[in-house]
Length: 344
View 1 (tube, rainbow, N blue to C red):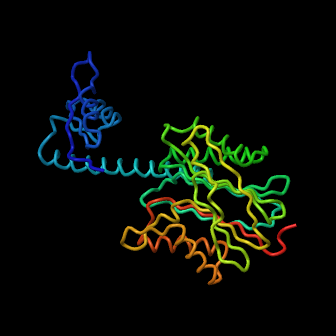
View 2: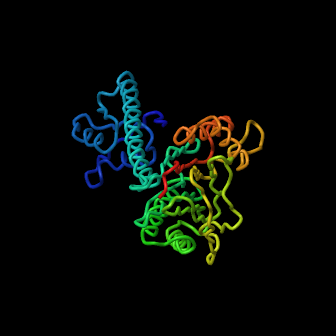
View 3: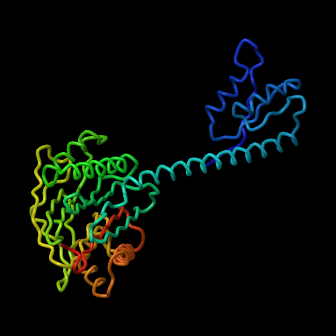
């Protein structure tokens, strides 16, 4: 932050007007500059008031000479720099607190008490953004024993998108506990998005999976979101069917989202992710990893014995390395595992 040279401001002498009007005017014109106030020799109280209003120091006119002025300017500039640094530090701390609150909303603790399924998740913000973007996820177990999992992505990056992601996640959790599922759930979420978004161009992609109490089958709904990857025992990892997906939330006012029944099997791992995981580049060219590249990468990592948190960490790190550095988009990825004998 530039503080610039010190500016001199002389308070008004006329008692009928604001004595500090000239100083206040200078402070408004040059808020990033150090300011010195000049006062009459017998008016130290006015000088102190000038400092309270915003000047870095004051000088008495009758005592002013080149040496004193030079030193006062140097001191004023350093005080201004210290003030700016302190203000930036305070703002950074406030932003960190806001980020932490948003993170708790976007990346919640799963509610899986009583479920045999194991849960893992990773989130990595995109390059040069301290604030989380619009990626969000959640997973809960309802009283009937079903496990519901969701991941979504609000287009754009910033506090408005992050806040909208929090609202959609909380709405999804409430609607899921209320018994909504499939098209009815997504239609209601679209209404929430339409009422809460900043403008009509904002949309959100979403993937929801509801897993039956026995853990062997699930319902899948896609709203413009990439299909999950499943790794079954004795079979190569592959994408779940995605031909029947619907549009992203917020694009079509009367859209429908069919729920597709999927057989999971006895032992499996289900990975949900946002498009940040598949849109990173491969090397210096324009080629992107894509879903096929991601599937091959995960197959190789599973074959090497990785699972759970280690698998997610390896996947996110490899995507970053292939990209040649931090990804431009946020990445959220989560994993549900069902071990042998984990179902009823």
